[in-house]
Structure formats: C-alpha cells, structure tokens
Length: 230
Image 1: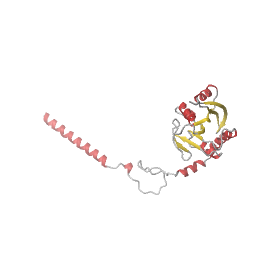
Image 2 (image 1 turned 30 degrees about the vertical axis):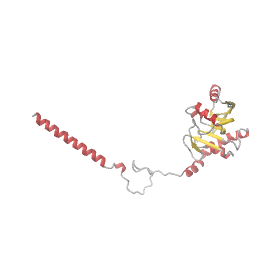
Image 3 (image 1 turned 135 degrees about the vertical axis):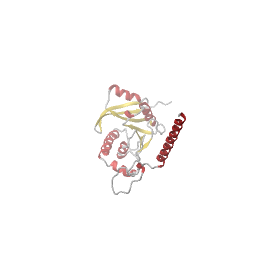
Image 4 (image 1 turned 180 degrees about the vertical axis):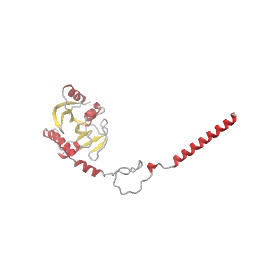
C-alpha cells in the first residue's frame, strides 16, 4: 500500500514539474500584449499606444525650443529684472562692457542674456545641467577655470548650494584680485547677513542693500576680492 502511494506521489510530482516547465516556456516565448504594435490609426492622440511606444513625443530642435522659451512673458520679465540690477552696477563703475563675468548656478541663463543685452559680451554661465547656448554644464563647487580669470562672479542661488563655503571659495578663486563677487539672497540683515559675508574669506564687504528683484524682496551683497599674496 505504501509503495502504491509513493508511486502515485512521484507521478503527481513529475506531472506538476512538467506543467510548470511548459507554462514558463510559454511565458518566455509569448510576446506581451503591451508590446504588440498598434494597428495604424488616423487618431491624432499623442498618448503612447502601449508601454513599449517610446516615439509618441515630438522632439523639437534646441533652437526652436529656445525661441519659444525666450519669447515668453515670464522669461522676458526675469531678464528685465536682471538687466536693471546689472545696469545699476554699470552706473556705479563696477561693471563694464569689457568685463569678464561668470554666472554661477545660472539656471536657464536669464542673467547671461541680461548681461549680453546691456553690452557685456564676455559672459560665462554654468550650471549642473546645461541650457545651451547660454549656460554650460559645470559643478559650481569645482569650477573648471583657472584662478583669477574673471572680473566679476555673480550668483542668485547661493542659498541652494549643497556646500555654501565651497561654493563661495570657488567664486573667489576664479575672480581676479580686486574683482567683484555679487550675491543676491532673500532679504536679510543682522547675524544672517554677517554669516553670509563671513563665508567670503578672501573678500571685503563693499555694501549690502535691500532691493526689489523680480517682484521679491531681496538683499544684494557686493564683495571685493582682496587676496593676500603668498
């Protein structure tokens, strides 16, 4: 009796293994329904027809994307705000058309375009993600430039830096002795302002003034580099 049961269990076991194997082979060979190409359709829908459809989006050339972006009202308003900021520096003799300017964490390049519009031609914008042709890709904490090659370094995004001290060190390093570091932060004063100024260990404070920038209350800080010769 025991041998009969043992034989029956073996047959059931082999049968289960056979069924499982055939099922697995069927799943491997069969094409998933989600990857079956859709039949031609006259529909104008832009949604993907299946999870394997990666060609449903229209890829615009970069120049066409830029024309669309640069013609928007929001873009031009922000560029205008930067132009007013830089024109004030021009009027004070702190920025000239021949100045070499570095814009750190320049985003999509509003400040780069603003500087170009007021006549400053030699402008370099960097960001962790490029936005050509205005902004190139570079790490703000490890700038790929020699020491002292710029007259002015500008940023409106110091507060977003992962390592603020390193960020500031790189701004100072790449600006020549006697050059200018310009920083815009949310409106601040007292100890908070002192902390920001204190991060610039090779510069002295020129001034810090409260301004309205792009509709927000901000503080503009001007630091003049004063590097000690070895």
